[in-house]
Amino acid sequence: MKRSNQFIGLPIISIADGAEVGHVKSLVVNPKQGTVDFLTVEHPDWQISVRAVPFKKIVGVGAFAVMIEDSTSIFDLTEIPIANELVQKKIGVVGAKLIDKKGQLVGEASEFFINDDNGVILGVELSMPSKKVVLAADELITYGRDLIVVKEEAQLNFLDKPELLLNDQSEIEEVAPQLAIEEQVVEKTEEKTTDHLQEKQLVLLTGRTTTKDIFERNGELLFPNGTKLQKEDVKKAQEKGPAVLAELSMNVVG
Image (cartoon, rainbow, N blue to C red; front, top):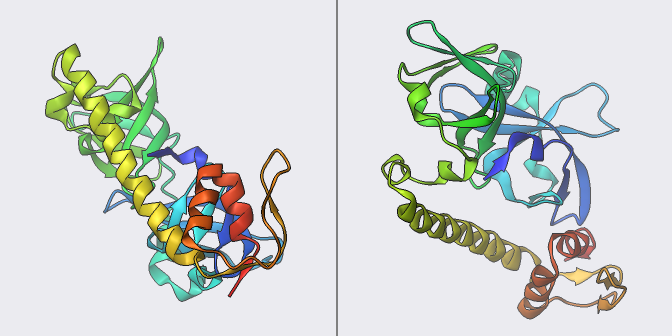
């Protein structure tokens, strides 16, 4: 799970091309599905056209970069009518007023949370006078440009922290001892997501050849130029962290 603002500005890296192919400019929300369907891409060479990468084409999202298989995953919006239509709707979520079905103002969205594996919006964050609270996506009825309509009893279902969005509502309502169990469930979910991403990285990088020396942050040489990567090498890069893995992904061929 990631906050929407954690996507903005991330470099987009093509694993096949071994290059940075742009930066995330904005998130394109599908209001009917409650999902982020596209990321618009910013690149200094694209002055006129607007381009985007479908969320389903993303291999993984880390703290350092958004990883895609190759540059063909980025499309001109003229080639994807639905993407262009969604961009024009300008559903930003952040800054939208939340109003319940009775017309009562619930609050204003200051952030929203996304399942970084499939783009599903998990919930929104609201800034209250004394603290910030979270409202799960199943309390939201309609996403508009400036307004989000929520269920009548939404204010009774505020959550104290975003992590609880990864749990079932029935679990959230349990007493304190049950919260410890819920945290274990969250950890297992995150482990599964991480395992899935790492398997994709193994498939895409194994067998490729480095085009430069790859160093660890402390200056230690990990892979000399010309190294044909084996599974063990990719796993070693994964263990060193996202920065090393991104550097490796940007400097391979084959």
